[in-house]
Amino acid sequence: MPDLQQFSAFDYSVIPKIDLENVPKALMQYKSDLLEFTEEELHFLRWRMMWKSLARQKQLPPKEFEDFVKTIWGIRSGRGFGKTLAAANWLGGEACSIPGLYAVVAPTHDDVRYTCFEGPTGLYSVVPPCLVADTNSSLPSLTLWNGTFIRGFAGDTPERLRGPQHHKAWCDEIASWKYPQDAWDNLWFGLRLGENPQVLWTGTPKPTPFMRRLVADENSVTTVGSTYENRENLTKTFFQNVAKYEGTKVGRQELWGEILDPEEEGIVKRSWWRLWPTKKPLPKFQVIIMSLDTAFSEKQHDKKKQTNDPTACSVWGLFTWKKESHVMLLDAWEEWLGLPDLIKKVKREKRLTYGDADEPMLKPSGVRSKNRPKHQGKRIDMILIEEKASGLSLMQSLAAEDILTTGYNPGNADKLTRLHLTSPMWSHRRVWCIESDTTEGEPKTYMDPLITQVCSYIGEGSIERDDLLDTSTQVMRVFMDEFIGPLTIKKDPLEVQRQKARVEAEKAKKKAKGGNPYDG
Image (tube, rainbow, N blue to C red):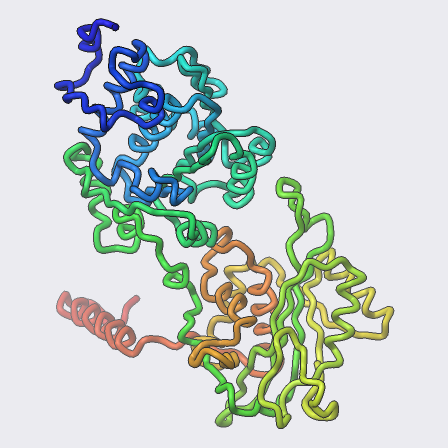
């Protein structure tokens, strides 16, 4: 048996009493006595016992994860919680217990190397040196005495994860990955070694669609923690710099690990949409416009993902409500279509009619009841297409079929600017959607993706796709320019009063100094 005195060379505090019941199961399944352990196994045992005695409960795996009931464990917390330390200890411990291949994935190569491997709480710092057979900082990687190989990958190159096989993995700052879904899928395709492949993800969350799906995964268990829980181990300067955000939305995310609702920051609020009752017949429409955002050319091809964006379509009707012009969302869909199939779909949907019928409801994606009289309702008056490469091709092809279209040119206005310019339509409560048949007070299911995009967009990268948003802003611009006229964003009456008071106070101040109160 190795001399236990040599273990004092490690910079640990008092060695806890060794309790065989707490020895990792992977070791005890073939060991019945400490005398049977090798020198490396005793080093490993001491390390695990020390970590369990020092770690906070939230830094240790939940029971569902330890018992393999759940395959995914997430640590979602504020900055400085100790996520990296917990993850390095978990992955290092698993790698020592079960020899094999393990992966570490972080947003970039530098993040993998300088945080997960070489960082002050990374694998190189956490795993006892006597258990390390070899390291490679440039890869980066770590080889243990038992043959286990731990390799780092970058989330911004998801294709590198296509092929390698692993037993388990640690995904760090997963909310910041450039291609989260692609990297996550490729990682899981390779998690096919051993009886119980598992993943631990760590990070301060962001309100992305991927993060919301990940947290809601039925195979996942999530630990939620805050910066305050590790305050005693944080420097005074660091804590003061982050604590100043307490009580703000930034603080909720960066201190408490909360996943914010993306619509909280949206320019257009969901409450601004008006809901047309499901049992009420649709109004008589004066103008109906089909708005298309096309995507089937080389420009829309994502070479990294090897996919195109879908073509998006929305249909809107203009009608009069209480002597004001309003618009209603009638249909919305997204499909991956080539040019020939898209032409067929546009020709087919151009023949559909909307409103002014005994039947009050539309069917999803423009499908109408076979019993509905064909003469009722109004057909599409205008097909609006953005004048870009794929859009021009569609316009030319439809013209050859005697279907005239209208081009839309946004000029130099980006997506955010277009949304700002058309947002008064929503703030003035001029935009309607149709109530669900089954859920009272909610819009029809097929309309919700468009509503979500409009209400969640706050700039490039804020939502996964923005194709339906584009169809909405371009059609709103046409309605405002051609049929409704300019609208301004309604101001908060209290804010108007405050502004007035500030102006009056400034005038009084200048007058008291003997100046002209109206100067400047």
